[in-house]
Each structure stands twice: as C-alpha cells, then as structure tokens.
Image 1 (cartoon, rainbow, N blue to C red):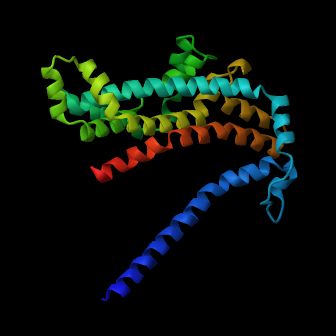
Image 2: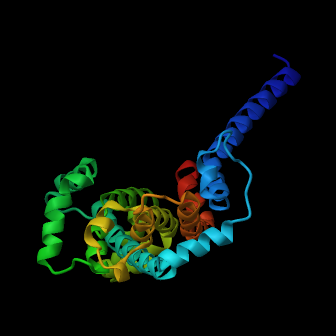
Image 3: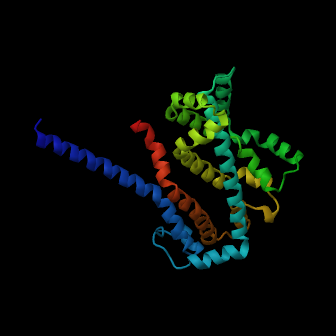
Length: 280
C-alpha cells in the first residue's frame, strides 16, 4: 500500500470517528436543549404535533410561576448543603479507605474489600424500609442530617480511590516517608492527597451529581417544606390535576444549571483523572 493510500485511509478513519463523536454529542445534548425549549414555551407546546424545537419567550414567566409555587432558592440552598457535605465526607472517607486498602496489609483486607464491593449490587430500594426505621429511631426525620447520613459511605468511591492510589502512589515513596518518621496520617495528608487530586475531582463530580439528582430517599425522609431539597420541591409542583409542563421544566432547567457550572469548573481535573491511566 502506497503512502498516499495509507494517508487517505487514515483520514477517512478520522472523519468516521469524528462524525460518530459529533452525532453522539448532539444526541446527548438534545434532552437539555429540549428541556430549555419546553421551559420557554407554554404548557400546550409539550404535546404539540409536530414537536416544538425552537425556544419561546416565556422562560422568565414560567420561572416566575415556579417562584410563586415553591421557595425555589431555599430548596436550592438545602440541596447545596446536602450535596457539598456529602461530597466532602465521601472524599475524606473514601480516600482514607482507598489508601488503607491499597498500601496497608492487615488481616481480612481482601474479604472486607470484597464485602464493600458486593454492596454495590444491592438495589437501594431494598434497604429503604430498614433505613427509614433507623433514621426515625434516631430522630432525624425531616432533617438534612437524615438525608445526608445515608450517603456518607460510598462503595464506588472506596473502589475508585483504592485503584487510583494503588496505581499512582509508589510504594518506595511511602517507605521513604516512613523512614523519615512520618505517621500514616501525615503520609496521607502530605503525599497521597496531592497525588490523587485529579481522582478527587472525578469522584467529587460523580458524588455531587448523584446526590443532587437523588429523589426517592429525600422524598421519603422530608415532609416539612422548610427542609425540602430542590428535587422534592419540584415534585410538589405536579400535585395538581392540571400540570403546567412549562413551569415544571423551567424549574428543572434552572436546577440543572449549578451542575453544569460545577462540571465546567472541575473539567480539567476530571479529564486528567480519566486519561492518567493511558499515559502512565
């Protein structure tokens, strides 16, 4: 095969890959665009035939309806407190546990790690009743603490941190720190944390968005409107026979904006964590 033919083949392959990625990106972004379109249109546009695909001029009016129905910004603040607290606690616990599982030797380590992984395959709905009973007995119903405590232990976070620490933190570096008299926590704070910062960004985004979008547990625990998170508050908008889809999707649209901002803010670290394994 001549060099010209080989270059032509490679160019065709790149065009095919980029075309596929472009189409996949458009398909991924379309639900968000459609949500924006419906948020700026009257409720009747939801069932229009042919479907409406161009934005309207009612985005502000529909959002004003949301503000008249629920305390939107207070619910957003409650949600931010829950998500930020859970994310920080999960990052701390998961990184400590991942460091221990990756670099320490202790009896039953593999069995304990396997037990943690097995909890990932258990549907969360199966534990809803016993978890609700425990939270009720602890007097944490209708509190943000009752919402948060369930998410503090994250098996996926422990697994990700264990893998990242195992691949990224050399054993020789830890041994050298021990020879210099560093305690295990000093090694974690001064050596491990700076190295696993990209993994922090990745896990932080995963946890924050997962808790932000979680509904079932929050709806189960919270009954006081003052304690509503944004998911529960938005769900209360549909408790009528005449559902205003424009109003609801306007609330959903503005509730999604903080997630987009957070992802863009940590985007570089997120990509760095994903690509690290391919360049090591």
